[in-house]
Length: 369
Image (cartoon, rainbow, N blue to C red; front, side, top):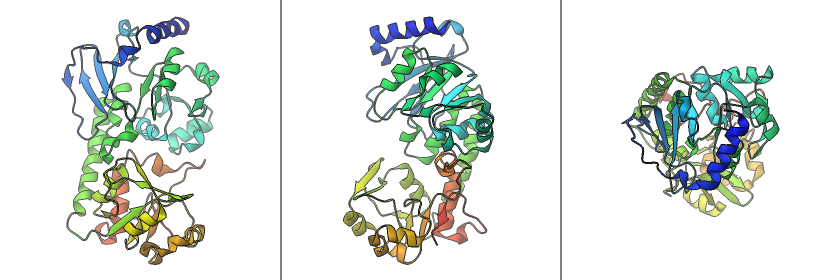
């Protein structure tokens, strides 16, 4: 189908049938196993796969349904994606390792702000000019996007689908990725199964995930029979201290590593507290993780002298996750870390008690000296 015809068809669909976002009532088929992720469900159908996104963006009241198929006769259907995908534009660094682990890095043809990417195989393609720089994720260069003409754009949305609808109206196939809403670290990693469907590598994706899960659970079991030191996270930006809520992905990692998280709030997002509230909750904590990427304890204390009041600061147990920075400045924790929570957990166990992981060298984290 030509891009012009496809664009006109999509515009007509958006004008006359915006309500298409509701469930279509089709037969679901056999449900594939999704153990930790809460954001998607997968069903095997007679045309291929049915992918249902339960939480496409924060506060979404309805699911999004996609049909993944090799049947070209279904391409006129709204939210139907032809698989296997031959070329893709991604919009978050968390998507990149998924491609790399499935040997599909060569399918990436565009990305907004390529400097954020650290994965070596994809970095090489960027340096060779095979991945188009698309500018800002909030305002991608449409001319460049039309030029590379990807089979699929993997997008994410923080509030609604206006940006996605604009891309669809231009004739692009767009798949929402809401992995960032997952609360369990293995839930984020399990999104590799979605990538496996897209590139015809579902079994390989499932196998990769199972190995990550096995390693993660093995490390978590090491944390079950020893003391639980107190830990807190984050730092001040202006007058506001940003830190993970008690049910946030990062807080779950800390708890699985055997720490007692200082924040008892049940939010799965990020909290915005004043200094006094944080000091009251965390002043006697033994460990402080993930303040802003300061170069040393001294620079942290100089940034705000009140930091020096915390026990973790005074006793020199402050760690940041910028130990692996890519050649263009991207932070590998914010890229590979979401697929490999087992590596993060291993670091956290070593930080908490080095005897639990003898001989380990910190991968993502670095101790402020």
